[in-house]
Length: 225
Image (cartoon, rainbow, N blue to C red; front, side):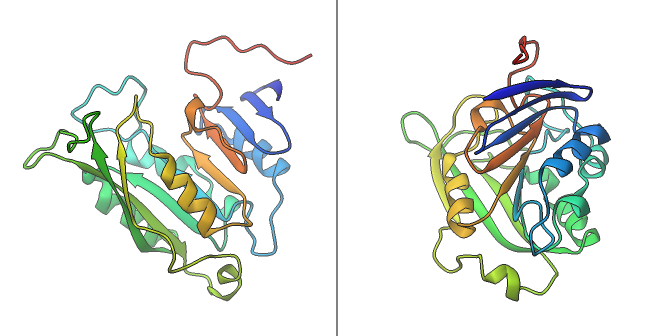
């Protein structure tokens, strides 16, 4: 893959995937991404957008910088990225309602909820942290813009995919691979964007954005000459 140093960070790419490593609050990063990814006939640069936000207000020591809700939502230029498509947003239990309000404000509505049942190495239920109850699962909100569905439906596979994922918990914040499979099968002819991506998320057909999309923090990157 080619890699280039930019004023906003780093860009790594080939003809199957792109990775933008920099601060999501930097407008120059998004301008560069939009320039390289043209809109399709639906007005989308990406038909499917996935976000795994670094939510604050968690009881765990996460090992990476977190952001306030307002910072997260205001950093994503949603209207420049998608007009008539789907959002897939991982949420913690505490951030469910604020995310639904964000969707409403941006003319989206929740259409599905994917539940990840977390397993430990011995295949027992993962013992997560919660306040009133232990949290053994995590949620991915699936939302659709309120544009007319006819055109988007032509490239969407419906009624044929599960809304439950049963997989082991892996290192860090790594989410199950099955979520990517669901997205690709649901939108088989589409391009995808993942926001707040990390190196283990690199995948063909996906453009990745985040301060660790190419390498983990404090890792040296060398530009291709």
